[in-house]
Length: 126
Image (cartoon, rainbow, N blue to C red; front, side, top):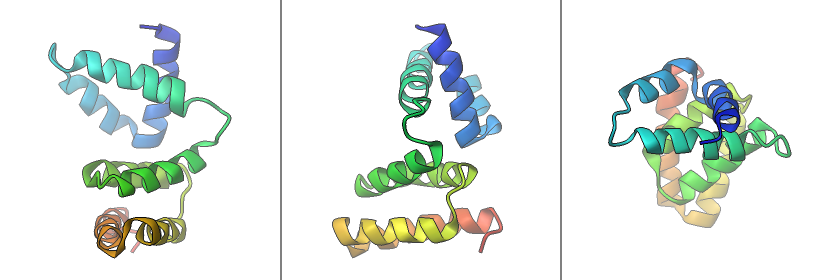
């Protein structure tokens, strides 16, 4: 493991998903899944997300679109909160769901709207 990239990834992961969420996941890691949590932090967050070529807000918007297209609703909820942390507005989330509806179909957009509504309500934005 590249410790520098891991540490950079840890900072970016906490900034996006929140310190509590990240700590909960890392603290819950055991010998079975710890290597994967470490790899996610180093590679996904340290290599991918921490690359400054694309800002975090844009990455969050891209990520919501891809997760919506893939029907990964648990991750969509997590990254919807992360997108808000990275400056994405509820209006931008709505526009992202519109694009998901155009390219992935109305049922998928409806599912994304349901998840987004729950997240936005929890964050007192609706």
